[in-house]
Image 1 (cartoon, rainbow, N blue to C red):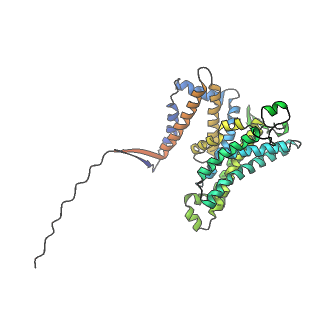
Image 2: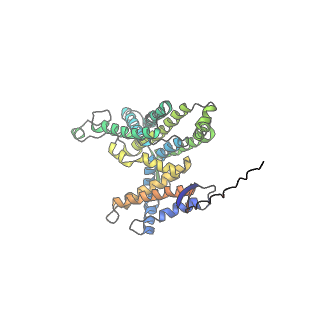
Image 3: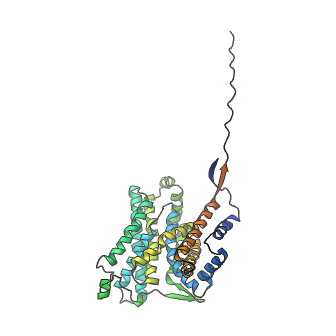
Length: 369
């Protein structure tokens, strides 16, 4: 008996909906699944102020997911959105500190540009290594995440850098970053009682630009051709190496914008521990996979997972420990991704095959003279 996984030639209309929904219902937490799901929905989306907190978590998820989706569409595997987000936070906070005396709109614009440029520069490194030396970008981009994490830790905890606050004795003893001026805080917009972060609006604009680039430009057409067949793209005269570097820089810029939003929208300081514990870069890969690399679907999935994370924080208590919340969230994502695999592929069991009988020997008659 053997197991085979085959690609589906046609997908039943009910399957894309039934598989993810059914997988969530199958989550076993030791509590009433129906009551747990109701609490997740209420505290993630419907309770007072819940949707505002959900958008706070969804903003960096949206931008890091776009960074993954933009590269994955060209079969370039950018796993470095986490480190690119760190560098975006470094660039944005540095610009905000340096330009604290300027008017608020100028500081915010400078932070956005600095975050994008810092993330793009960090993302271009594995792109250059892939284009020039055929180095596996999965390994290089992943390892650069650790380099970026150590770098921002060094800036605040192990050096007297420009980003570290040394103005008081307490700050010198207990290292912390310099807080941004009030003018550098990114605005929030009230819509029907929801507080929408400025970074979330930038994420929606970025999703639209990624979609337009992929569907309505020559660069997007070349991305599709290179993703389908690099050899055919080279035969057609496309500059494959240059496009690889460009798409990695573009992905890094999107993740860097997520880092800028973390600083400008929420933290208002370069916080190495907080930004590393969040893990938005790795979660963005999950969001991109669930959205099937569609930029607009990324927005929806980022909000859903942001609500899940936001509800998880509020679920924690004596009857719902933090470990159980994390397990619940992990199981939901695991079954959702497993369901996506079943949408595209099907599993077939094959029984033992009996050996075919040997052909009967053919008599060869000798011709007489």
